[in-house]
View 1 (spheres, rainbow, N blue to C red):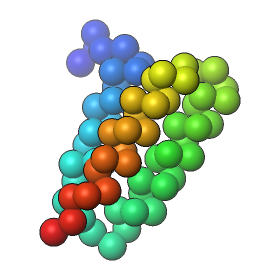
View 2: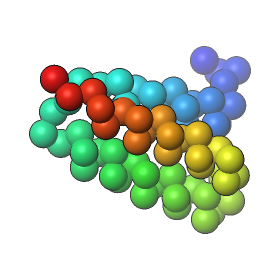
View 3: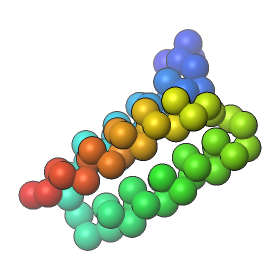
Length: 66
């Protein structure tokens, strides 16, 4: 795990959020994560294509309703 890049760790985290089963707070968690991703872009920590990958993972996870 130490060999993972910062972006790889972000991908793993967003996948974990997206795959989590539905619960009442999941939508809010996704909204907050998208805001955090946008903040990372503004801060220069990730690129636009990386932001798009992360958003795609998170927003695709909204369909995991029970």
